[in-house]
Image 1 (cartoon, one colour):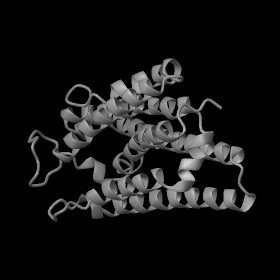
Image 2 (cartoon, rainbow, N blue to C red):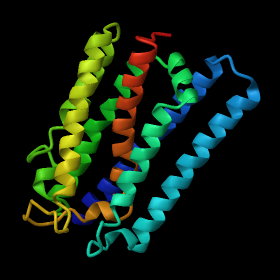
Image 3 (cartoon, rainbow, N blue to C red):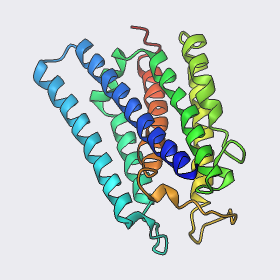
Length: 240
């Protein structure tokens, strides 16, 4: 039974990550098709995005498999690399001229609706917890309330699709929920900063494929918020 549950968790995480990034790449392609750019520029932007995504995925997967990230004795912990690089990248991309232009061709409701994936992330975290792979505070049974963002995402996409103020408030609230669980996760790592002493410590995120949680899915969550807020501040509501 344990092996079946672990396999289900593994497959579920891999499938969710793959599906979400296929959707993101598809949305990028659609936006590029609408943008009044020359074809070489479209191909260049799309190619760079896909190559960067694949390259980052392969890199963190290799680091997770090698055990490099699981050394928590060094300071700062090596797992912080997986958190910091995507954050800097997303902030840079969000305020780039190219991204700002493309946001004018992505429906505002889509940037909100995609966040529903966080419901499934919470289910995967809970499945890891019941296998004693993850501490309780990182689940909805503990201090993780991020499932609220996922559950309200379809509602925000439907009922707030025409409300710039409403979407801004929802994005900021959901970002706070994400910040909360990221903080809990960091304080659950076996480092001198550890505040949650219950076992197990949060070490699984340094292993493959769970490294995709901090390396791919968390950046996707805050990245969508960053892009949505940037869109609302520069283009307002986009409904085409």
